[in-house]
Image 1 (cartoon, chains in turn red, purple):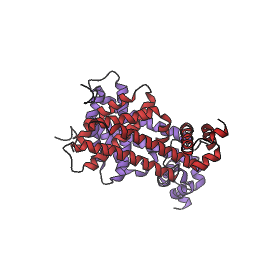
Image 2 (image 1 turned 30 degrees about the vertical axis):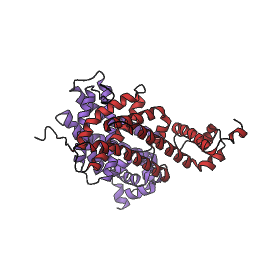
Image 3 (image 1 turned 120 degrees about the vertical axis):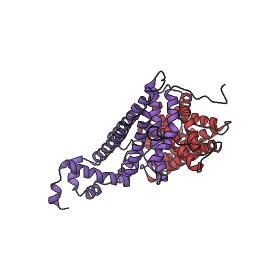
Image 4 (image 1 turned 45 degrees about the vertical axis):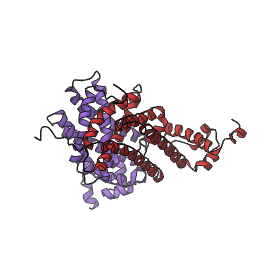
Length: 215
Length: 215
């Protein structure tokens, strides 16, 4: 692409091209080993222009984190929102998550297991992302809880369930790497199978008792 | 403590003192911002001696990771091993985990959410730790599965359940930070409540079906 043609690309589009390139490089090399030179070259944009648009390597990484976190939350919400029951909303939300991870593996590498100590700004962004994801899932669980013959502190229970679900889904993305042929649909069904009944128990305030020690 | 008295401490004991100090500093400041000076001072040992014993800041961090990972796995194993049934073993193992996190918060900060890109050696050690924890939990789940009217691929199912449990427990340690008064016993019961029935479903090869879309 010639310089003349490049200049015709509007800034918002060019920023997205830079972020696309950056996600690929950050996922492949990690934050520290990534160079803005490589990202600029891959995006077909000069290095000074990358700095002009996104300020620094840190700014670039933050832009990647933000865009992909927003996409993930949007995919979850779009899938879960229209489903006709809480149970199906949860299924649809989990499926959207596992599908996102399958279809955007580089994005997931950038979002997943990032060091909160890369920089204070990155730590803040990661904490914010995690809070947004947990709030989304917790809200969905709360809807499930509203149907149940509930406990005294439904919000607290919903948060507990949300942390459990988010952690489980997070960890299963590592399992997916070892089982690349397992489709998102099957992973979703297995996780639903494992958590749905138990989640209802927790939201209903039921308590598991140790069989040998009690009664 | 005077230099003369310090010299009487045998090397293995002194190494443990250094690691104790290092865990506190790494947990408080993060890997990058930690200084060997501060660790040496806190341990009451000269900086050259820290380097002599543990080679480098990276060597120190690796020693911390290794020791605390071994302690965590040992605590899990010691608790889970003697329990009289698979169900109680799982309960005991989870309780040991949440108790460890409560009693050794600094150790958990060092083990939890570390950047796999701090260095290749640290990445390898973290991957190794995670594999060891997953193998331990998966072995326990397999025992639970042996009792069940099993599926075709019990090992594969046990791994799936283990990733789910480890991820859930991992994530709940963040929830614990927001609920410092919640005792490990109650967290264990809630998690057991949430996963026990579902785990049996998965190990029995039962499949959750979407109520509105099927049947």
